[in-house]
Image (cartoon, rainbow, N blue to C red):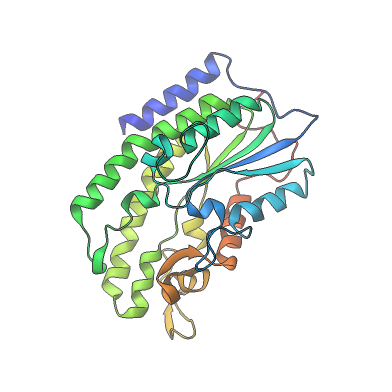
Length: 284
């Protein structure tokens, strides 16, 4: 966990050097900068990018209290922590998504009110062939996450200073969908895997001064209480929510449905204030 501690040192150093910015300006536009993978741009099965994602819904809730707030989505479907740093999937004038985010933050000092982030799930995408685990693939993906995520959070904080409120999310568990196709053991085995993944990300985010939305909690990822879930019969509540709030059970697509994106937005709203008068962490 040395990298996590190092990010905490970076954040402390930013404050100590006086680089923590002011609260968002009282005049002119304010921005909500949305970063991450396909979830951040509202991808849905069969539809691609949409304006019905969690960032759109979160923006609508925040804008109700702050009419000057504009949403800027820089997310990229399929983005990994590696491509977020180096580019290679989506095209940005600045280079990578992280480069583009830094450029935007530096170009709008004091005017970026919120930054949200979801990233890392694609680092291990494809490591569960046929319900099993490709250990080599998983180790490589986790290794990339450990190296890259602290760099991403540190660069965002250094570019944006203390003016924005930074928030990230943990991930729900599409692996639970194996339950409805007879893979109960695989579904149960996926729970500690996603817990370990989320725990690492949580540590990095908190060390970097991010708030963390508990999306896995909203999806009841540990609740094995059996409930009716037509047409799948009676299944654990955790499975029922994955089937209802993602396309994993119906289309083998882990992206959220409209209802799922609303639940993600609601999870963010539990840690992101809707009152524009609240100061971001690190500000006086």
